[in-house]
Image (tube, rainbow, N blue to C red):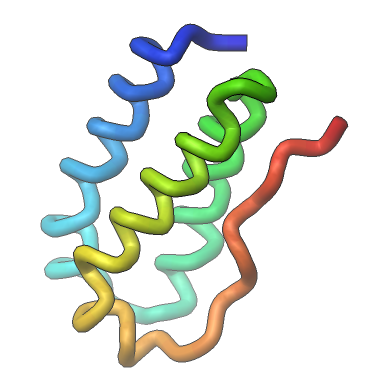
Length: 83
């Protein structure tokens, strides 16, 4: 498990990646599997006390870019930590 500070750093890096990633995305099929893999890696490192925070940050990232993501249609829910 990672500390809250480590999780925040990873979430910040992912958030910084999104604008250029979405701008240069060639096909929607590339986005969700890649985003989900990166998000899942962060979620898996979150302890029980940080899981809700991590998921809220991920959802907030997606809300910020909702307009760009709208054309991509439905997606699976964010990954949740398996116990």
